[in-house]
Length: 156
Image (tube, rainbow, N blue to C red; front, side, top):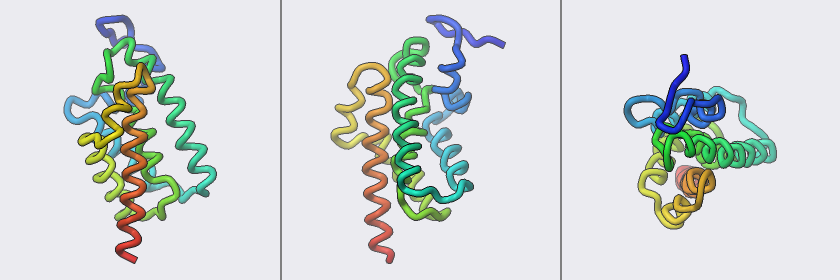
């Protein structure tokens, strides 16, 4: 089965940018993609912070490439492009102690910041191509990471 867009055939790179198909969910694809990643992340072993930053940076850089490619076929920051949520969530949970309550909090806080787009996320989203698609989620991930750290300090 080949999926067609108005601008051509869906490529393997675009399918990856769409979260291996998760982004084609009919409702709230960004939230569903983040939920999917949160569940996967929750079952992974806790990572060394250095390995975590390498993975997060790799997801971000790969996302710029993949999302930029997908945007050419699907349109500017199409809702089905969800790799940016993967990258942003990786930033959100970087070097934060992992437990299911923290994963759930990260999911909710990240979605809040990704939807509201507090400055400079809105401006970052206006960057060209894949940079704009991924940059606002990186900002949302940074805000989420800081909020999680603050919550953990308050609870401790």
